[in-house]
Image (cartoon, rainbow, N blue to C red; front, side, top):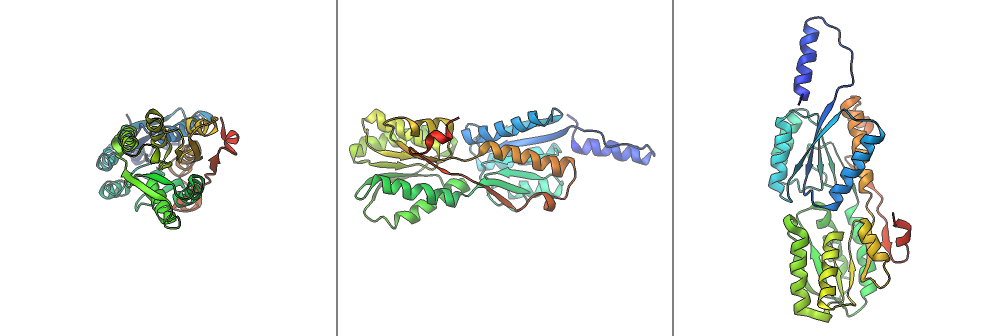
Length: 317
């Protein structure tokens, strides 16, 4: 693989020899660092990016993929690996970057821009394209609490290791203070390295311990919501209401299903995040435009509407 440094070295050598070189369409190398490639949100961002590549004819872009398996430390190691290979740009999706400060600085020193999707405002990165997680939490949480109603008992699933799910959970915790007649039976922080399995085991335990006392489950994204729903059904709890956040096609279909216990999700435009990242790389890395003239702010928020049984058919694909 021809790295950015190798190409620049060749061009510099030709310049020294007095050889005039036009600016041909050079292939660019991109390293994509997944926080957890098993997450559907990351797969959808990638799908949007891939569709943009195809639509714009970027067949000369070489993209390598590094899966961090839900580990913040592995994310840092993968960023460091990409930097050492001298790629032209790094994309990071849905990551906890608190352990990556040194790796990000190494990329900055090597003049390799890092573009992130839903990974927070982190020093050294170029831009984060995301949705407003505080707003999503503030939209879905009151809806959920109002739907389960006064005197209800709920399960509160959280995940503090990712900035987005952490913010959503923090907003839910704040809103809960205004609903003193709703009881949290149990609160659990999901293990992101095996999020579906961990949620399934946890909810099986809660369903055994609390049975039909469970009136609702607040989940920080759609896959744990589905795991919770599965466990409730298996235990014979047919009345507890469940919400998620992400708006994956399966979740929207579940919300729309007659009699389903899943009552809401939030539709995040993941594919648009991928396409937008491609556009920024094209303008900044390939066309050499000044980043300040291309990127409107350090964090760019896209709209994410609430999806309920009343409007879910509008979001069916």
